[in-house]
Amino acid sequence: MGTVSRLGDILFWLMVLAGGALLVPCLVLPAWLEYRASLQLRALHEQRVLRLEAELIKLRKQREHLGIDDAYVLRLAHEQLNIETPGIVRIPLETGELAESELAAAALPPVWPPEDELVPQLSAVVGELLGGYPLTGMFVWPETRPVLMLLGGGLILAAVVLIGAPASARPMRRAAERC
Image (cartoon, rainbow, N blue to C red; front, side, top):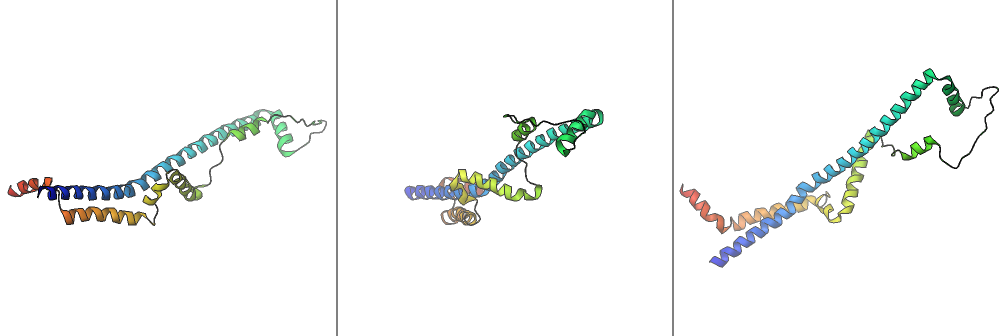
């Protein structure tokens, strides 16, 4: 009788552990992946904010110079609007180095898409995370996740219904029933 009881206890715990091993990743992994993806999106947004703040500072300085410095206004008119001033001959110079504005543009991160395009971007980030761990996809994919959750829950339910509580817990139940 002792070996049958011990075998029942082992079978009970194996079924509970196998059910838990299927059920827990199905419940925890999607939330964890969404959390990691949101952290990556947050980092991208912080980069965008820093870039926009730097651009704002640059534009404020440019606005200050426009109000104060007439030579700066003329230079901008020559460069951006191609307005020629009589008596001034421009000689184009080509250098092998990049201009300061081109260097600044190359150093800035790419512009993040507008807010309404974030959902596909979030899906792409989650897909990238799943690409690093290919077997975790079965706990997240809508085709396999419900099946795995049913299997895990079914194993735990079957262990409780068919085998009952392990024999080690039965004396505690009997003592609780006596009180």
